[in-house]
Image 1 (cartoon, rainbow, N blue to C red):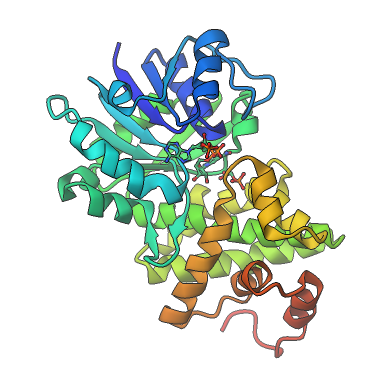
Image 2: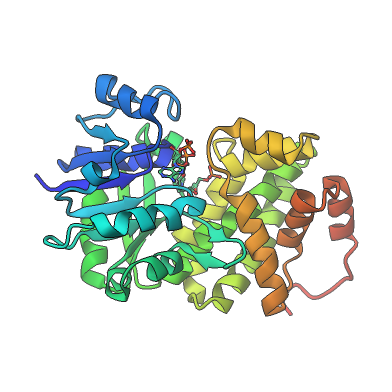
Length: 336
Ligand SMILES: NC(=O)C1=CN([C@@H]2O[C@H](COP(=O)(O)OP(=O)(O)OC[C@H]3O[C@@H](n4cnc5c(N)ncnc54)[C@H](OP(=O)(O)O)[C@@H]3O)[C@@H](O)[C@H]2O)C=CC1
Ligand SMILES: O=C(CO)COP(=O)(O)O
């Protein structure tokens, strides 16, 4: 039985760990919370992050990184973007060289300040050849739904096609279908930027707007996602696939989205610190909104929705004022 290490014992880490266990991998889930690891080892549940969920086949959990990666053949990153650099630094001296484990990232975000996507963070922490073999898994997939076996599709992207095919097989189930993709940058950027747009979707819902507004947000939003994605080196068609428009649809239309819920709570008048602290799970769009703002300034990109989200988060502007301003922008052609 091949061992796979999953870094991150939250909702998505547990869901992906379960799929691997169902496919007969020996799964070791690493996290920083002793109580979560103890519960998983005792009862095969993770009640802090997933309701009505039990691992289908036994897995083990640990807070010891060295134990987690010992003799592993694959390492899956499912921790928040903000933790990728520090965990990679701890991981580097522990990496088993004998079996050269495949690295996989399911984390979705852009780091503010450095404006790095996850693969660029990993590239600076590990040798280049490690990252050339990296596989990115992303797409429309709420943990709450996939863990209950809702039909789920994902992109699996790598410059190394063999690795992409290997990971495609690792996660394939009768309820999970994956498509290989050779544009990891486009897949990563789509997965990160949709979180900012999902915050906006939650904000319009919080102000009582309905399906017309949501359709406008998704359609004008995908334009922003594609603009940033192309500027960062992604391929246009990727943004109209599962990791782009697909993930934007799921995240902008479901109350299972942490980003959508955060946007709604902000529009209802809660402050950002309370929203983030009370969520109990990572809201990646909050930091990514700052990174996207920095990218918009540097690359001179016109991103009205993302910039409105940034101002609500970091300049305390009111959602209703941002909506009014958006609707009163100069009239223009749909396609410039
Ligand atoms: N949830 C979902 O449906 C999906 C999430 N994703 C992406 O997956 C990533 C993880 O999300 P999700 O599972 O929802 O997040 P959660 O908040 O549910 O879980 C993240 C886990 O990582 C832990 N963690 C934080 N810092 C560290 C660290 N330094 N070392 C080890 N563990 C750490 C957290 O612990 P603590 O809580 O104590 O901080 C928590 O257990 C995000 O990038 C997200 O965008 C992608 C697809 C679907
Ligand atoms: O990435 C996700 C779904 O594909 C999860 O989005 P949230 O982090 O907003 O819940």
